[in-house]
Length: 425
Image (cartoon, rainbow, N blue to C red; front, side, top):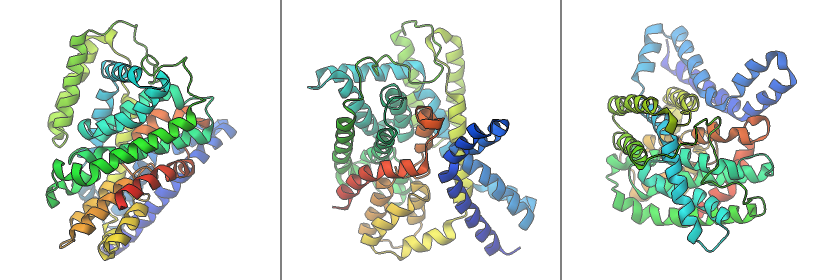
């Protein structure tokens, strides 16, 4: 069977997956309108299911057009380290001891800032936590920030457009906040070794610009939300994770330290799935040994996000034939804006990976590709690997318990513009 036909089919399915992503909120509306089929509509309305579903269709199509062996061979040739890592780090970072430690740290810092404490806490959640993602990786930062901010701004009573604005700021800030190091942001990680970009290089060329953009974005949205952020709910004490059912037992310092060691170990072994999955199994065992210090682990949310990213790996792996020629044909300035736009249609890590395969790319072009990719990382759910984690943890605070792709795009545009200005200049 002609390989070109399979490429065409894969591009069509990728386009249908994108359309499905933008239409996901419509399925949630239909689930309320037609309760008899609510379960089916709710399944199609799960953003995290979209790419896994269409990736399955792709594998079936390859089996029909080529052969079952070819379909299996392609599926097994993909690398699933990132989906596995995001699943594991989400669950570990969202555990009660880690979450409470971060909340207490934010509450302590907030008390010394010259503004109302709760405003300072929200600002730190939108600014400090994304920047810390450069140390603990972006998926971990997204998980912590989402759970910390949920009770304050991603809840009923906040105007919907403001929630989308805050979500856009969070996604953009996480995307650019991981550029202070060479290992925390997936799009940077894809090129760091090939182009010999060290952490010192990232801090000098990307990091300080990212810090300024993050601070501006967080400050503007918190100022807009100031009248809606009340003093009744504190991020230091509120339960951002749904269904948390711990017994309120104080958490010993030793338990918190052990959880933090688990988190650090997973981060350090992020590129070795056999090892970090083994550590994760020990982590599961430890949480079951001391259940009174735990809240329910977010296994469902983590698995859905991993499923989404695995589907993106399968579908995205077949898009190189049309994406790479576009990237290689653009001059540095055009490449920046091209990457900014293409990132909304495909994972920014996949985009920079394709760039790393181009022989003879100039240094300005390399910078512009990565700068555009990270600046546009908040525009859509698929633009940056940690975004599905944010959607999974925050969607219940939105109308119909779903996040519309159009609302996210509009909400992220201002923060994206700020990031783009700093990186472009």
